Image (cartoon, rainbow, N blue to C red; front, side, top):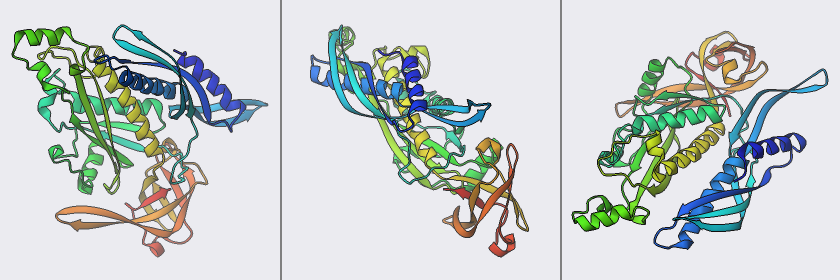
Length: 403
């Protein structure tokens, strides 16, 4: 397999030499188990694995603030992300190694950045990860995975902080999805959002990530419950068989942190071999878990999910709350830490509360004025508007939005 560090170095050099290049040609390897002598299915799975490796190697972009001092280009605030779409896949080689089919591919990875809604704001948004309940809690008994509702979103939170400019906060002690068995996800009550902000001492939560662990079942449940001694022994000896595959499905949701509206949802699904005894106590996100192919498949899926979350949030609007409003001066709950700069212009929105069906809901109304930043502090900023706040009925609690 290509050295990821060397690949990253070559790409970063290419970024400086040609800013118009958005696609890379990458060679990568992948593998998959051969189940029941089904080479075709194994080849497809191995190519998918190699494609993921190619994306992780190649899809790197540099977002930097470049400063020239004494004729020397200095790069401040360099940020590296993994992101990319794989296409034009060419199979270079395949070989059988034990019970696995290993392939080598050449593919193009598109690393061009951009949002479908043309949003180009680069502000640092605060995103909170809550707990992910089980849809079928009994499925977690296999492997003693009952720590997953807290440990898995915490893993995603760390990945976001490591590989994106967003500020991710761990709040996995809070669960917003109260009835995962019903499969119904509704807007978050703003009273509960206010309670979360109070608990975290964080007034500028832009987005909330919640999820449901929908499926952790064995593909063939009989594999672990075989009463016949000889069939059970055969199952244990035939540990690479498809019958040992275990499902994993994660439903993810992103809600607006100010009004609770659901803005994004996606299901991620994979499967991998699970070969431990029924009474094994493994837990999640540790070496014992990752020694199973099932654990490694979930680890790959979480890398993919974190990339999707980061990209989605990057393309959403940045919002900050108005803390004080007097005359033509407004103070905001965001500053240097969120990427605000003097001269930035943000649109002002009034926020109104509605009490519907026993719950408080918020809606925002766009005004005809904007604010220009005049002073920036680490976690706050001051801006001016043309006119008086009373003219536009602007009050503390209203919002400024960069779309």
